[in-house]
Amino acid sequence: MSWKQEPEYDEAAWEAQRDALLEEVATLAAEINPHYGAPPLSEVTLEALRRVPRHRFVPSEQRRYAYLNQPLSIGHGQTISQPYIVALMTDLLALRPGDRVLEVGTGCGYQSAVLAEAGAEVYSVEIVPTLAEQAAARLAELGYHRVRVRVGDGACGWPEHAPFDGIIVTAGARHIPPALLTQLGPGGRLVVPLGEAWATQELTLIRKAKHGGLHTQAIMPVRFVPLTSKGEP
Ligand code: SAH
Image (cartoon, rainbow, N blue to C red):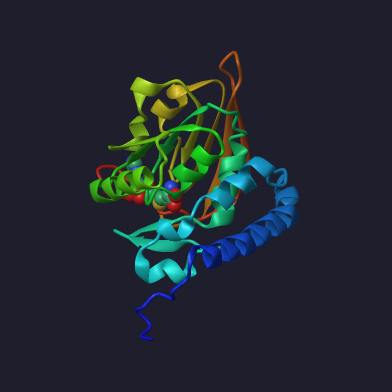
């Protein structure tokens, strides 16, 4: 078999790999989350990850690596995030069923699917049109009808569907786009990697109190591709 051919896994084999990944992610979270003041991952989050076929979200040449706890390239200079980080960011949103969540940076749509499996109604904005189209088609094919994807600059949010109970930015931002703070509802949570482009960012949780006050908590260092404007860093 040439290195280009993907191994012929059936669904049961993919599921076994996914279970092993889930074990790894849960163990890692139990070990390191307490150091960062984050709780161990909730059952809701872990179950959501268990239900999403990550191998369907990565390009075929990467598929054999789909269940490694690693980010992978999805083309267009972009990545699918590391499963542990997807789980952590989902968990930090502390979702309740039916919560309305804005995602900035759809990429391949994996995080959107995890949010939907965790009970959210998802509005996801992607700046690269091809990625948005592919993600929307993939999510529809997999039956994720509670995810809506549109092309645009996610820094502007999606005002027609605001206020949001949760906002998740899956690209590194130098500062919090003001529109996102406006579109975050009272009691809402915003998770964003804050820092310079192509450097380490600080994964940050912002909570908006019922009266509108903001509480900011730095969680842990992470590395994301940069949030761009019109596709340029
Ligand atoms: N959420 C993805 C990770 C995506 S990587 C996952 O599930 O794996 C970050 C994505 O953000 C890229 O697809 C990139 O094109 C997109 N992006 C960068 N700047 C953006 C912006 N201003 N608005 C919307 N999407 C943006």
